Amino acid sequence: MTGPETRFKNKLEKYLNSVGSWYIKYWAGSKYTKEGVPDVLACINGIFYGIELKSDTGRPKLLQLVNLRKIREAGGIGVLLYPDNFNGFVSFIKTKNPLWYQENVQMQDLWFERLNK
Image (cartoon, rainbow, N blue to C red):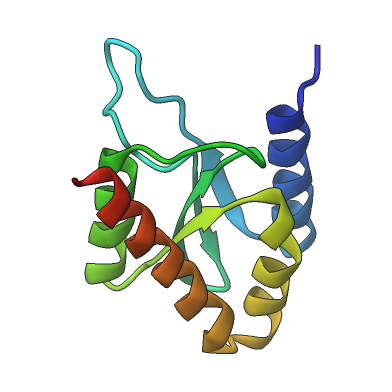
């Protein structure tokens, strides 16, 4: 069975393959894995990305946002990715125009404030 989240993950993986990136789908929540790690860890054009995938109605967890922030603080790129901003993500990868990423970080900060009350 293929739901919207699986289709979105497959779309991202197809794109990552098309640009020759290295990536791994991280399965958190089991006995031997760490909670809050982004869904996809990738190296794209020599830059580390942590990508947390959400469905159209998905809500991030506070720990996921904390880890995306830690990735940014360590010099990587932490992305909260929804289907409706996928094209912006692709454009960001191609052009490195910081506007999309700045907006994505602002969205993460808003979620953080909302969840940290």
